[in-house]
Length: 315
Image 1 (cartoon, helix red, strand yellow):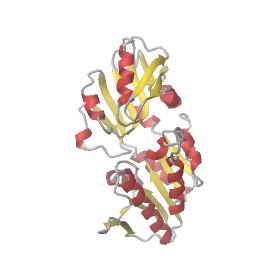
Image 2 (cartoon, one colour):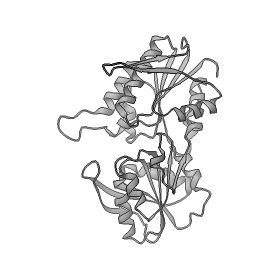
Image 3 (cartoon, helix red, strand yellow):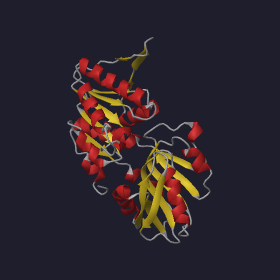
Image 4 (cartoon, helix red, strand yellow):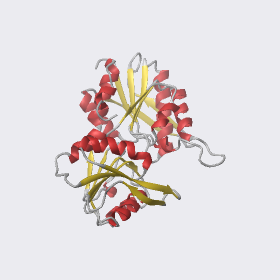
């Protein structure tokens, strides 16, 4: 791993340290300064000249602070004559803004993609974007990973007879089907209508779920409204045990309160793409690490090896 330089933004230093441990390289230091007028300044405290630079920064809350910090770090790496700068975004929150679904709004997923390229990113490494077409918003190479194998391995050790994988909506059904295929299970999906950021309605469930155990599979859980609504529909069909699995456990708003008060949920399984504080950790929550997945992808990018072969049976 000669000439590889890894920096971490402020968003998730614990994940960055774990990735560097897997790569057996040091995590390089940087200094973030906030001036009296609230402007930020970032200094990279390691030599980047002709180096293969990776900056790890999930765009979790506070999203705008973390985004500006990442842009400054990319610009600093370019100014320091890095041979290549890769923005490692385990969570790309703006992938939810992929279309103009109301008058006079910005398609922020595309705008932020342009900003990252303009700031100096030569490559993007991200994981499980909410809408896969956001990949096409970037004018630079994108390695778009998924955590399906990481999540599936957790469930493979248990008895899954009479179990079905359920997606909260038809848009996520393809990912749920990949997950179900890993576990050799059938799949079902809810027909969801979003009323507001916190309110959704699931009219019906497509697929046979009656009397079965369910693993609800989603890419991201924010307020938890979709999950609770889906569980209510599953209860009407006499579903027994319910597990929730997601890649990005954002758990914003009333999500933790909702899950804590839902006796139907046996287990919540998520990954560490975003930091999950102690105040958000429930007794039935399991947090899996994606550090080794990110590290192996970085190693392959650095050595010019295939990344897609990592996901040959989940794509």
